[in-house]
Length: 595
Ligand SMILES: Cc1cc2nc3c(=O)[nH]c(=O)nc-3n(C[C@H](O)[C@H](O)[C@H](O)COP(=O)(O)OP(=O)(O)OC[C@H]3O[C@@H](n4cnc5c(N)ncnc54)[C@H](O)[C@@H]3O)c2cc1C
Image 1 (cartoon, protein in one colour):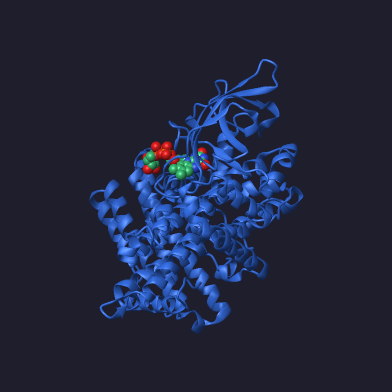
Image 2 (cartoon, rainbow, N blue to C red):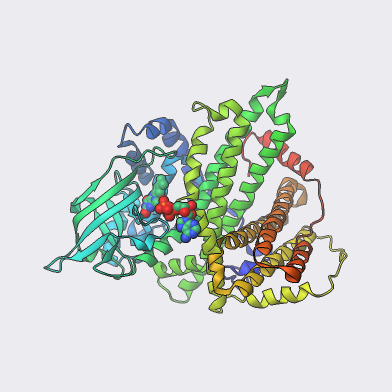
């Protein structure tokens, strides 16, 4: 655990010691075995059936794959042993998400079942509900779906119209309404359904068994990708739900929905990166085999550039996920040590790092989109062929930026949550932001202090990047006050600065720790990746920072802030092309994503 545990969002104003973070190179033997089991399962049970799954001709196929995953224990990783699961750490369950994330539609089905389908009951159910449902969900005997979205209530989830009315004898709620885009809808036995009781303003949550009756559904949705995943519109018509199936308390549904999505978000990021690794492997294999102009594709600089960029983005992003995952586990351990029950402790630890969860959902899903797009490009015509190895990944990737909160909503949430923490006094952002504003009008100290330690210079760049973020955010808050919420373009800019900075810091810390474990000579490629990624983060800070400053500042203030931005985004030039070639050559030699 970190010396004084870091708080959620605090990375912006606090340095972290490399030794205090978890890095993926530290997975123990058991965790590696779990990941291998998942990978083997995907390879032997899922990959041979991908076309059949996508054809949707056999509706029993996906549930039967989930049954097999259940037999292997893959559905119970988050569930405590007392409820028939394995009670693994949060980070280990993220590793499972990453390893199953290679499974295309199957990845969506398993993550909906184990995540948004099971966790509401696990975290918010009473003992009876947990015994009745979670035990069956952990083994796969029953399958779950999560019904929040409605035709007119998507991002604005609390505006749903589904109604719950108490029956005259007071024993049942009668639920009526329409839910849309429900993953696993076609075969689920249990539905977590969000509805408003009477004229309540806020949602309540219910556990509904298919056998309760009053449930009908449309045919499977025709989708751009993840075609093998069941997605249905579901109609509840006076569906009779016993009162004891209200989950948690009346009007607590929106909170449940949001908190469960926090868990889903960071896992979605990890799963996306599992898919991205698969895609890189396919692309590198293809580049190694295909010849044009008498040469392998892998000899062309333009292709090397792609392979390096794909790899280093995944490497940086996945490290950030497990850094945050460990922070969540550490916070959980502390809450439990302080006497909190495991369920609430898990939720509180996730809530604490909700900013990082939102950042990483966006980052992981956008890295995946970048990777699958470049994989298609490396494939050329074969990249575009439905018979080649790339098209499914390309089509299946796109959904990740839409569900579990669209990436726009998550970007806004990132800044909103940060500012709320600041306003509640949980995070002192305005103090450091004011200090940066002061620094702007002081004379800059130039020159090098001669520190030759690995990443000494890069860490200064990172420190300055944080200052750039604080400068722009602080000035935007001061200038626009309450109106900042309406200036979404600026919120997007701030979120991008923040997230790229977080991931850049994570990759520097990961590699620094790795070097301390293996020595510098053994980590040359990783050092290159960290340095190139830092350059990206600087580029994003320059572009997004400028956009934001132009949007709210003018005259002297504008000029001063632009000077500040220039000062805080200085980075020593390096030959990025050569660094990328070294990275690409390493990956090309390994003929797969090698980290
Ligand atoms: C394949 C698939 C599976 C799904 N599975 C499930 C499931 O299992 N359970 C479930 O409950 N839901 C599920 N969903 C629904 C999904 O979560 C929603 O589609 C998503 O939240 C977006 O809602 P929407 O489609 O209504 O889009 P809208 O909310 O209409 O958004 C459209 C666009 O407008 C933007 N936008 C919306 N509001 C704002 C705002 N305030 N400011 C700025 N921009 C905004 C969005 O970012 C987006 O770009 C699934 C969807 C799909 C496609």
